[in-house]
View 1 (cartoon, rainbow, N blue to C red):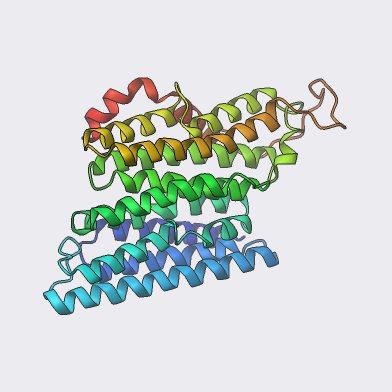
View 2 (tube, rainbow, N blue to C red):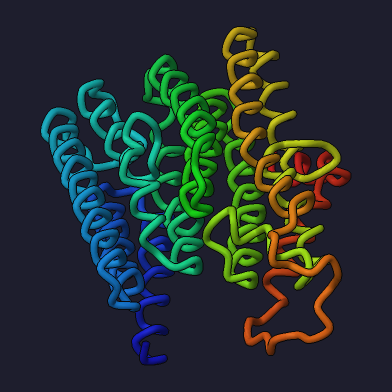
Length: 348
């Protein structure tokens, strides 16, 4: 892709998200979401593969449907209440419709069906943008309208997403689909605690972005898209395989890694709000996700392909990928647990 076009598209992505962040008017927020959607479509189709075109088409249709719902709901609310202010969603019908549209935007269950299919058709870097940056603007709107949303609806979305995210990833062999279901499950953890402690939603989002970035960048450096490919990676780069296994365990929420921090704080908040049944289901759903992360770790560290020598390769291919983002995201994905009290002090 032409570098000038690439800079324009990436700038548009930043502009769309910033516009939604800064807006308190529904029309401005809607414009930001539309700029975001239109800017990522050319990035999706840059490789001119039929899979990529199919993924971009599916993504465009779902995002356009969600944007139309948001516009209709905000217009309905403005017609009934006389205001376009995002924080004043006093009409329950319009609020429910906005929640459904935002859930479709970020891929919450049961509006998640597009997410694995779209991510499977993209290259890993575009998939990284879709899994991280594209979640920011809808989640910002979610946080703004959260006080007006029925708590039962948020709980249902959160529980369904963690269960579907865990259950759907169990039988997958494609790494991008596994990461898509991982994304759905993590969105559930963010939404379930939104009604009680929005600052924990922000913290969970931050941790999710670091962990997912580390996972995608690692797979990009390995050029791996299937589980079977992972079995050949140990002999090429033992250190990278070790850190990748730790990143995956961090996504699964095992201590003493960063992922444990968000699950601990969310379950602690749910217990404090006297909803032990919800907390128990969330903890059990986390075990489903942990299973397929362990499956990936097993494939990487404990199996070797039949045609692989049982030793490190004496040669190295020239690596063109910049390693600084991978190093930073991996470090944050593994080591933030000890500074949890400091982070809580900063964000609360």
